[in-house]
Length: 522
Ligand code: MSP
Image 1 (cartoon, protein in one colour):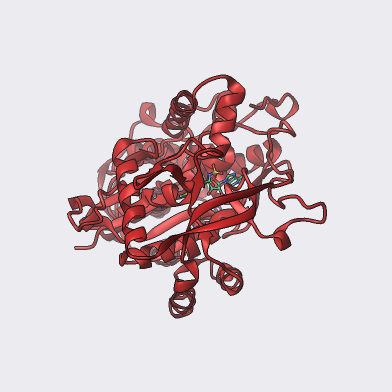
Image 2 (cartoon, rainbow, N blue to C red):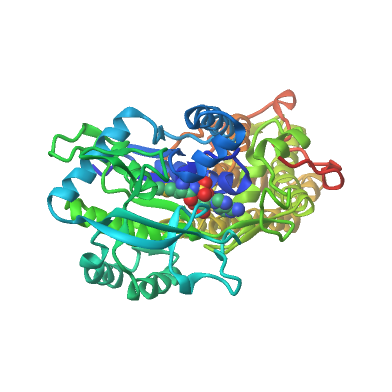
């Protein structure tokens, strides 16, 4: 029996959630729902949460005139609310200010200190609060700024604790080279191997005199633990890891993670720092780390100073969406595997109207209406036979599975929609309305059956992306949407009365809104 464990990055709570954060949570939720459908036994666990310590949060709270904890409570609540709105089905939400987390992080630090992986060292470096990391002078841009945040890093001279990252360098290189699925998409692996060439030991604590808001080093109250060590540990503290080996059931059940889903900007922390820590703790390594690209808005980087940061709720409200499916679907398809993607109102409307309303929704609606019109909503035994669409559906399901194994959810969505295209072509080519006019009723019924039967499989495949639309399809096609993929057979619909006129309703209505012209931002 194999269990499944997937995680997202945990978001800094110095601001409200935006659609970049939402992209990752939707991405992970789609993977989670898909893998649940594939598993016939074992359990699945999905972890997300908030990263609540560090200088960035300390400074934001100070500027707002509130305590860091008040800021964290206020903003963490907003993240929780946003994920609810987007139907993110996480199993656990961790906050790094949770007491159990803080205790385990302190224990991890002490263990590494005791075994000599952490040592004390005087240091002068350039610290970027945005990245929460020391930068190498050669990483700065031509103006001496952090290339991600465009700000000058602060020169910090402190006596800190350091972690012996260099000790693990060769083992990490070997692991990446021997495990082609360890870093996904594959094209990111080289990037990490290049970064590994120049790594040095890293500072893993800050003097309390400069950063107060962090987990205290247990054996040295003058220091707090570096926020990235604190944050990365969430993947095991949430499962009840214990340094002395008395780990909770969940740790035994779910570790190692199948997938850590993160943004490309924090790949180094996950594929180098986190892996070295796990090696030092002698814990199994995660199976894969998937780095997604970044979401821009109208081709611009989202930033508070530009004023173009959009909250997921703003889109849901402006379009008066009854559920988040359209946004989930758009987010899943706007970027190709691991590359950057873009949100624009025009593209959003165009994409969901084309794929969900015109293509998939209309096909179901008109086929059901014909079944009612010609056969009073009944599937007759003679309509059921093997047909070319069954083979196509089987091929597409296999493709979908292959794409998901590599976390490539956009290619998978394209494959599903191409199957809908096939079905539209099939119905137009076979023209059941003409067959009915010519009184070739069995042939007509066969065509309708073939399309409706295919729609069952499409609903099951699209469910991870659009759970509400899929549910509505299942209600009209009378099957259980929680069905596992292993239960898919060639003919899913049985003979008998399927539907009456009153039960038919469009699964997705076209979006018509002028949001594009009077956009609101947060
Ligand atoms: N707190 C760290 C992660 C610690 S994980 C142990 C952090 N937080 S963050 O709030 O800055 O980012 C959280 C996640 O959101 C990251 O994976 C990041 O890449 C992602 N994104 C933030 N802005 C984004 C976009 N505009 N587009 C897509 N994802 C982006 O990093």
